[in-house]
Length: 162
Image 1: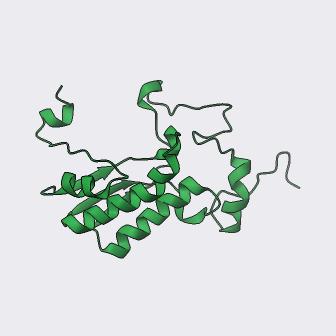
Image 2: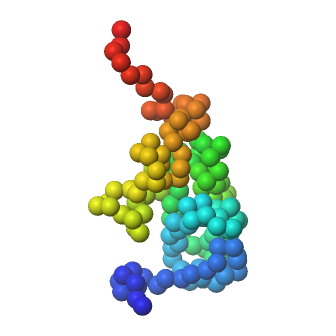
């Protein structure tokens, strides 16, 4: 089956994020790597390893093969929330790419729509409206963001101002 990208001349190469050699083989002669990998969002026994070892392997393979452009889908405020492991793992991946000298861009969206449950382009919400897709409520993250001076993280008071 040909994907839309392949029908437009893009060659798709696949590798196992937990197998560095397979990634090096997949990246040989490639111009760019685009990754949206996130073990946390899928869960499972390898979720943590994908977010840590797997992303480090992607960076290392890109370095070894001389990738000219690496596009990492990261997370908004990943560099400001070490207490949120999934966010922090993305920041560590950004650091690894920089350390290895891999030319990269980190996209930091606040949330992504789920293609399997996309409702008119709106991000799928799992749970009440005050819980994001990763299961964090604003109240969970607010103290960490406020401690780092992130704009908009102050608690808003309701009622009249005096």
